[in-house]
Length: 296
Image (tube, rainbow, N blue to C red):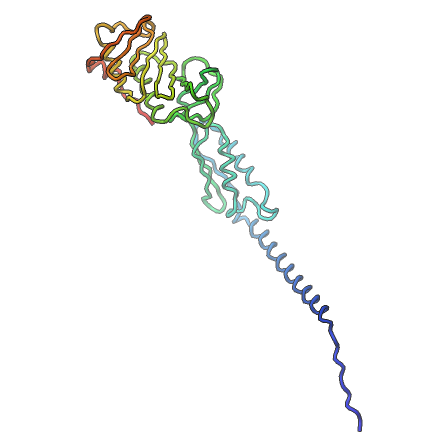
């Protein structure tokens, strides 16, 4: 009788088996990752998902081509050297906004994607309303807009084409307000009234107590408080110059008129001030001087 032959089983080392499994899983993961990255690289470069047009609109004098180039510059390159910045859904909106906002005179910048292939940049432009100058260095000035916001350094300007404002307790600086918007517009309105009356204002100094000092062309100063509305202040002034005693007053023949103290007005023609109480002013005179300006 022949002996039964027994098959020998091959023995596999567990460590070798684990290594083979890990190599297989690693290759599978690497292949999957490579396929995924390749898909991202390809899809994000498809023309239909790529921003190709940057439109720029707004302003009056700003260089739109320079603004467009600044916007284009922020879209060059790629994130992690993989996803292009022009990819429609990941374009750098905040970077474009920051770059465009650096332009002087520009305001209210908005950046938005209006389609998968076009981004539009819209903006406004600051319009110069007056100057805010350093009381210690009158050549150091900033441009003010209609709300009294300093938006850019002023060039070296001569003449009196722009009204100059001074703030003795605050040094002028860019991107700031010298006064509250309410005080600025109240002061501006009174300057308009005075100019319309024929007493032309060259400078306005406003201190922290809300006192405003108007220097007139031809010399002379008007002192007022901004706690009083410009219309009421002008009516008080017209009441004084409409009186028989002071009808001769005109810029150049008085030192100052002080209208800060309710119903009392101080008139200084020479060295000693005179105190007067304003009386009613003829309506025609008041109406002529108080032609209302349009304030933004």
